[in-house]
Length: 383
Image 1 (spheres, one colour):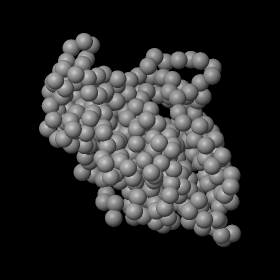
Image 2 (tube, helix red, strand yellow; image 1 turned 90 degrees about the vertical axis):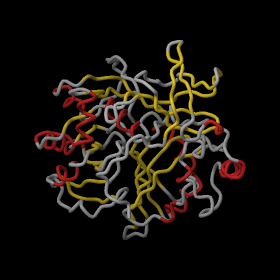
Image 3 (cartoon, rainbow, N blue to C red; image 1 turned 180 degrees about the vertical axis):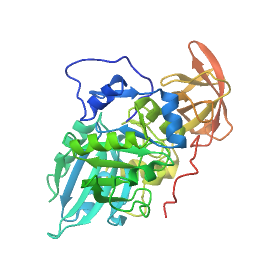
């Protein structure tokens, strides 16, 4: 996923490159190391790319993400113990954003499970998309966990290109190259379709807070699709804009906003926890206890009272005492204010709560505000 601050480009031969890497070089993108990959952090500039997604359409190479094809009889039932969400309610063509948990209900990773339905052999098929930084660990964990089930997992991470086309005009631009009508697809809906005459997996998902699709295709098709979208006027975007966009939409970044030491209830992801709808799962007892007794800390949105930017790791203070820590922060291009996410004690998490953030030895005022910081008016309804 996106990163909060651009690092200097690295040219280590150990860095992986996606099939779209050469296109980024041709378009003179600034490259950076991210999760073991050499990725574009920006093309024309973070602010310009951010605004393109908010007002028209932008595209991102997210081929570094982990892509697992899973299949087998009673697929959803066998995946149930590993997530707090009730996957069995999914119908073919639907998906669930959820989290993998450890026994302490800490978040191993945030993922999306796509249910594709049943084939002629009676096997159910699905896709699981995971973060690039956790792909190897997630794969090993899932393979080991599924050993006693009839399910199989195929890692398509390096075999497929994944392009996110996002923004209010994203669907109309993408539709030019897709055979099937994309209009009826609801958010988190998906289909196996045809892009530029070739098979493709298309999902109405994204990490920007705008409407759009994520398209998975073979590498040669991905290269052609990127060039076609570019010619159609879609703006190429890097990890920098992906980060500012997702932060405005208050979407969590794994490794910062959510980690193995934070639970979904602490992170404001209670909507993925379906305690009443399913049986046992990893971490359930901890979440039940938190549901009953409440959580001690919460991830809140903070709007700084000025343009001083609260960055990841900065201390959050109340009455002179450190009470929490900023997990993500930026100067919002859309609303023109410095915004941040931070964990603070539940007693200090109410809307309007005055706090301070220590920035380079000095403290600056901020206030707890409702999340998300930005909500698009262009996204179609889920139902």
